[in-house]
Image 1 (cartoon, helix red, strand yellow):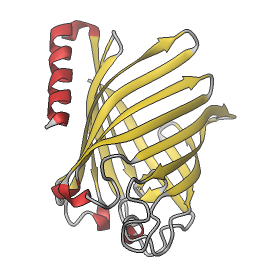
Image 2 (cartoon, helix red, strand yellow):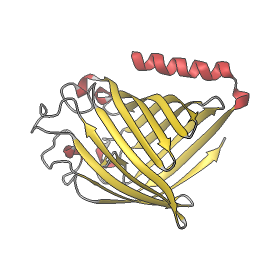
Image 3 (spheres, rainbow, N blue to C red):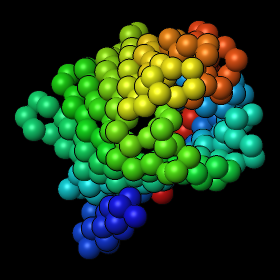
Image 4 (cartoon, rainbow, N blue to C red):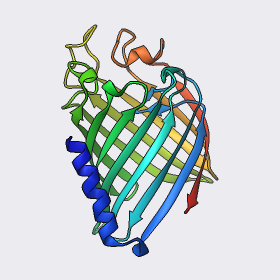
Length: 234
């Protein structure tokens, strides 16, 4: 498949570049809720998440990230694998890459995105495009052609690292699935210090949105998440 070719090429590039000029890091955390693009992906239950990243001096990186899915996971996990290139052009930071989402309990809903983002000062704007989707997403959400656009402002506010963000998820099958419109937007903010974080999220998912709303009976409620995470050098 296309995503396999992308990831295989990425790994090969790392090996050719040489391990001496690369950095390997890991992260792990516990979260009271798994919020993904403004919606709960764990049925409002706690999750554990973690990942490993390889970053090369050239700007190339490859990594993987795993999350439990709580009540929504049916005993399965989410496993993401990604590769990309980041750097700076003058005062503008940029990041481009590919990311695949794999669900161990429901592989028929796997999908792959390509993404690009730019950062100037405290402002980041980005776009993710679903380039490949499994059969379970046909004519539903997370199908080929979906677009997620987001922006954030990240800055220090007193002792806290603060992020204010918003996004809009535009599904290519909007108006065709279940009860109709499935696209939505969301806003949120997070505050973190020394690995501890507190986040507030709100979306406008319709109560009859079967594609996304089925993950929780009150998907559009304001949600508060607390977490603790830690990074490691390997």
